Amino acid sequence: MFTKIKMGNLIALSLLLYALLAFNSCEKQDRSNDRFVCNVNGKTWKPANSDLKYGRDVSAHLIDEGKTFYLDAYQEVTRQTVSLSIMLDREVSPGIYTLEAGKQTAEFMDAGKGLKFKTQIGSTGTLEILKLDKATNTVQGRFSFIAKEQSTAATADITNGNFKLQYTNY
Image 1 (tube, rainbow, N blue to C red):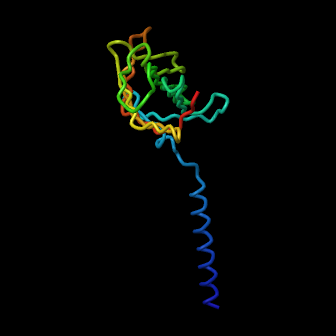
Image 2: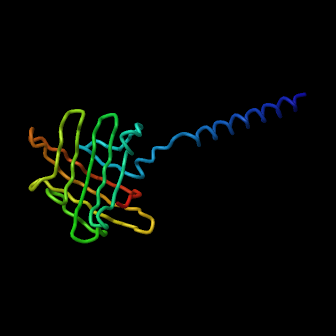
Image 3: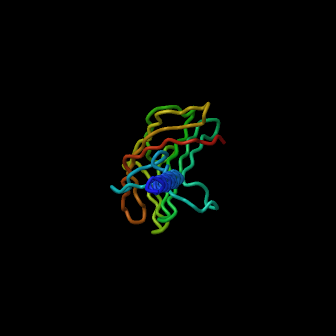
């Protein structure tokens, strides 16, 4: 009888352990760190959007026969957006691009506070495309920029930006 109790406890314990492992492996993983992350004014910023009517949390596009690269990341709770774009007279390729005003720019928008920060002459940044694989439509890079808000003259300091994304061709 003592052996049956031990065996029963062992089976129950095994089933409980199996259930806990199965439950933990089904938890939703935070993959935004793998795909896109940056610091906004010294604080870690990751995109997050659960409302599909507003699109995805992160999207990247290669447009105009590969001459324009656009990246957009959105955080639903704060209603903040980080955007980068470069428009060239040749195909976008791995390299370092200066972000300032005009055709190569970056923005940080805080819709919750009604503020829009943009790179300008004198407040610039860089976008480095490390890998651009046209066979798999993947892009990897890093970025940083300082942007100014025109009406308040406040600045947003975006640093340590990294992304590894699938992009869409248009």
